Image 1 (cartoon, rainbow, N blue to C red):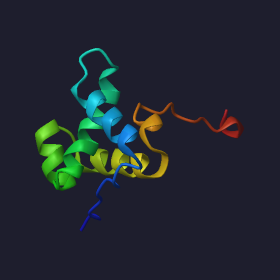
Image 2 (cartoon, rainbow, N blue to C red; image 1 turned 180 degrees about the vertical axis):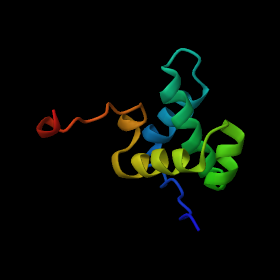
Image 3 (tube, rainbow, N blue to C red; image 1 turned 30 degrees about the vertical axis):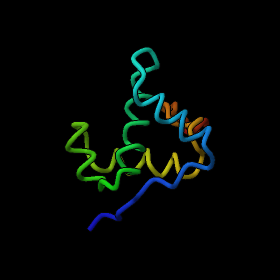
Image 4 (cartoon, rainbow, N blue to C red; image 1 turned 90 degrees about the horizontal axis):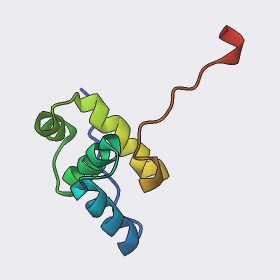
Length: 89
């Protein structure tokens, strides 16, 4: 059974406002908006399965982005570039 993950509470009022504003934005990058919505839905008490169904994605995608928010905050809500291993060519 997958681990139930919830978004941590906002560190301060500024962070909460920023996440909520981003989730409602129509001009921010789509990935940032989508991931901010995942955080907001988690704050509302929804499970990763419920959020995934609502946002039409896989529950693991929700878990990945909620955990990333928990660890690194709003600055890492965007899609992260893939890191290539230089030794593998």
